[in-house]
Image 1 (cartoon, rainbow, N blue to C red):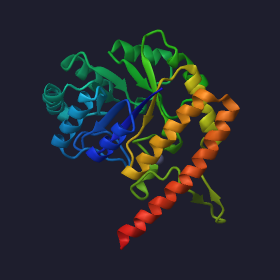
Image 2 (cartoon, rainbow, N blue to C red):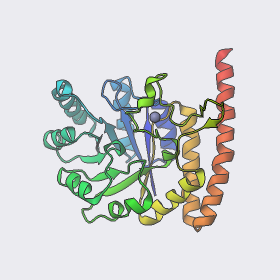
Image 3 (spheres, protein in one colour):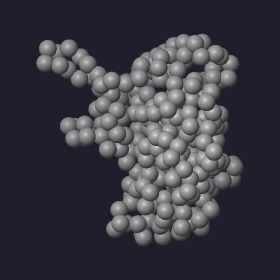
Length: 286
Ligand SMILES: [Zn+2]
């Protein structure tokens, strides 16, 4: 199983390179990529340096540009062409079909990865994207392994990747969360209070269901697992250790054993992570 990680700065890149990540992707702060809480590169020179190092280490590097308005499309394509001349990108992660068509035409011979935000749910849609030049599709965070079976085993030579952190996804529509209007961030996974002060949360997969899904996705044939861009380096560092352990567990255990060990590890690890983040917050306040 390959690991692909989203990065937002050079420090994160250096860390993940050392940890053996296979592929990298990043966004640029001036290109729209619909991201909550994560970080994009703010400086193109820093990004160029990172991509050069990735290439020198035989690692793949993708740029996320989920969608661009008509106003910006020409400028964006020209900018990407110039960047590609300097560093040779492996490809792009894209959501919008207009942009997929434009990239395929203007900067050919690149891998095109369909973003999870494009919500490809069936083989007919996959065939459509494949005809547009898409080589890989990232599964929507809302799909179940049985629903994804035909996508994963498609006859169009389209590879499938998935987020392991789907457990943290926005329950409305990632990148378009209408709950964001209340306090400027996606609050889908928070606890809400009823009038009688009882706490409830939006319906979602339990930890057990989440790891059972991961096991089934793996055994159906998903070979690339993704870590999304995180809000800070500490968080991402924890996640890659968790994923490496999960991959080891996937190889060595049957379904029930895997789910039990994965849930135990996740709970223990998260507790540690939150303690660490609290410590950092306290330290920053000083
Ligand atoms: Zn949300």
